[in-house]
Length: 267
Image (cartoon, rainbow, N blue to C red):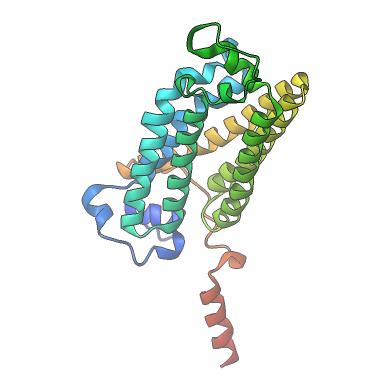
């Protein structure tokens, strides 16, 4: 049996951007592979937030404030940097993923940043600040239907976007498909939780937040699998962690290749 050893650059091209494996830019060979950076940056925010939603170790809805630094400094910054490098290397799909999720973590951090007082802007007119940083007005605004509707619709939009990403990921590998498929469910439950919070159904919302956290944790675990594969490959580790490539499946062949095959048979 013949074995083939892939370089880290070929590995990323095959598993994250299979259609451009042959036309790989030389930038990666000079500055390194950006994919582990983007995946790691995402995990540093996704994992703790999922555990917060699940209530691990007594975490609650306010625990996400402790990871605001990770949202800005790790996830947003790291994903944007990874997106720039992937763009320079000509990898469209990873570039779009990294840049869009970099924007997500920045926007989510801004949404819950206490000093921005976004929720307080939705508080009823008769509610005034009676404690530091407008906690009373923030709590009142966070319970309003209009505030929660806005957040819920934002998460619905992300769920739709992840449907598109899931379809595209079927040309890459199994962990990538799991990541985006579970994000669809997680974003869907987050949207439902905010919709129910807005109408006062808090017990239903609490359950939905936990379900969202559960699927978010599955997302993180799949992301760690991809990250381990990429990092071990980058240092030429003696063994590889399989990612179960899907690009070679017959029904997943590029359209141009299929058309060429049909043409050859016709000739």
